[in-house]
Image (tube, rainbow, N blue to C red):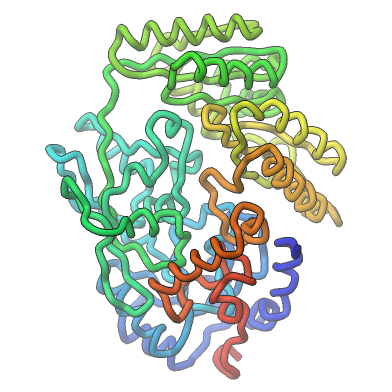
Length: 502
C-alpha cells in the first residue's frame, strides 16, 4: 500500500513545476474571465495569495493553487464555477483552512474558491429553532450571536474561534460537547450548494419531514468533493438551565479512561468528557493558569447539564464513580468564571504545546471506549519507538483520540518519523476495531487506509455517488477516495495546460 507521504512525494514534480518562483501573476484567459465575472479585488492571481492558499493546517506540502476567488454571494459562486467549467478547470472550495487532513490542499493549480467573505448570519428563526447562515460564518461567532437569545450552535471543535460553518459541514466536525448532542450532521437541516455544473441545488429541508433521499446527509462530510456550500440551515440548541463541571485527577491514564467507560455504563451521558494526560496538562497550566493539577497523571473534565436537580444528581454520581475508579481528587467548578477557565485550558491545549516544540501533528482516530486504555498505552510505545514526544488529549466519551506528536521540522528526518508514527497509530486504532476519523476527515491523510474499512465494491459505489454530483470529477479532485477507486485520479495530479502559468 502506498503511504500518504509517498503520495505527496509523487505529486512533487507537478507542485514544483508551478511553485516557487513560478508564483507570479498569470495573464491567461481564465483569470480575465474570472475578473469579468466578479468585482475588482475578488480575484487574486499573485504569487503571495496563491502560496498562502496552497496549503491548510495539516503537515502536507505539494499543493499548488491557481487563481483565488473571493465570492460574496451564491450567485457569484455560480459565476466562478461556470467560468472554471468553461475552461475545463477543477475547483477547490475552502473556508478558514484549519483542516488537519489536507482536504483543502489544491492539486494541479485549480480555481480556489475562498468562502471567507460569505460570513453573514442571514436569518434567525427562534420559533422554529433554525438559522440560515453563509458558509464563512465563524463557528464561535454564531454561538455568540445566539447567546443573547438563549441558544447556541452545539458543535464546538477546538478550532471554534476560527473554523467556519462551511468547514464544519465539509468534515462533519465534532467537539467536546458532541458526546450528548452529536456532530455537525445532527445540527444541519439543509444546505444550498452549487454543483460542478454551475447549477444550484437545495439538499434537505427546514420542514418537518424531508422528501426523498437524504442527499443532505451525503453532502455533510464529503469534504468539498460534491459541490460548494453557499447557505446552511443550522439547528439552534437551547442553552441549558443548569450546568456543572467537574475536574477529576487520576494516578494513571488507564484509570481516567476506565472512569469514562464506567460513567457511560451507569447510564449517564454527560454533555462532555475530556481526558488530558500529564504532559499536556502541564503545558496547558503553564499557558492558561486554569488551576489544573500538574501532579496528576491524567485529568478528566466532565460536564453535565439540564434541569438543576438532575444535574446535581449526575454530578454526584460521576464523582462517586471516579472515586471508585481511583480518582485522587474531584473538584467541582464553583463559578461560571472557573468553568470557563477550565474549558479555556482544554480548548487552547494545542496552542500550549508551542512551549515545548515548534511543530505538532494532531492525529484523529476513533476506538471503542473499551479499548481506550490499551490503545493509549500502545500510542505511548509508538512515540517512544520513534523518539518522539506524544501528548494525549481526547474526546473520551466517544473514543475520539487526538494524540499530539511534537517535533521540529527543521531537524532532518524528524518529519518522516512523525509520519511513520502516525501511520502506526492508525494501524493500532484499526486493529482495536476503530475507524479512521472522528471529525478531521479523510482528505489526503488517510485515503490509503480507506480499503481497510470498506470493500472494493463499497468504494466503487462511493465513487458512483460522487459521479452523480460531479460527473467530470472537477470538485476538489484527489481527496477522500483512494486513487484506485477515484474518478479523479488523473484530474487531481494532471499538469496545467502548457503556457497557462509560465
